[in-house]
Image (cartoon, rainbow over the protein chains, first blue to last red):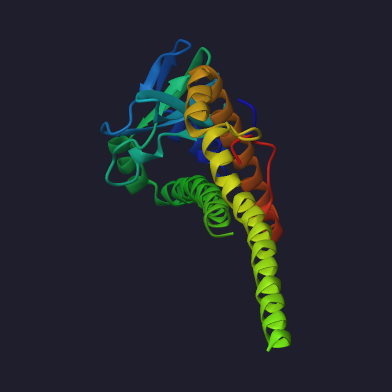
Length: 156
Length: 102
């Protein structure tokens, strides 16, 4: 992994981290292979351990649907947090940009672990909130910038 | 009486000459005002492509190139958004990137 501690488990002790990571199920994807599809049920969140995951959105171009890259997730980063956030549906498409490896954390196991280890639950949830909050802030800013251009284009 | 008739004829002649001169002058203006409309209708625009030509030109751009432009735009906008979040200012919110889609 790129950083010493993956973003999801920052702040956990080595022992807590080892116990939490043991809940995960390793998934290997060949380049181009799909991890999840937009609109499908999300029951896991993933930690990228190797490779690169491309998050895309379908855009209509000349009447044809094309996948447009909106973000890439690197080792140490979390992808698919819809698995932990209601209504538990993926809002993007995800596929391996290159051969990749991830650890998937099933929601049910994670919630059970949090119930038994509230401190771990608190730390991981806070880390997850940071990941989600950052995504929200970035996309909110992108939207504001786009709106600014629309207003300039239409009314000046 | 003769003098009165002479003055009257001279005045009428002057009015006629003025009318002819005025008519000649305004006919030239009217023609030049009408001409641009005809030219606009008949001549093809020189500096800007017509909407039809633009559409044709757009459809010539390969989808792969459009996709690459869109993805470049997203990356640049994301980087600009990250920079704004590091140091939020009004200027950073309105800054332009080098994206051709801006």
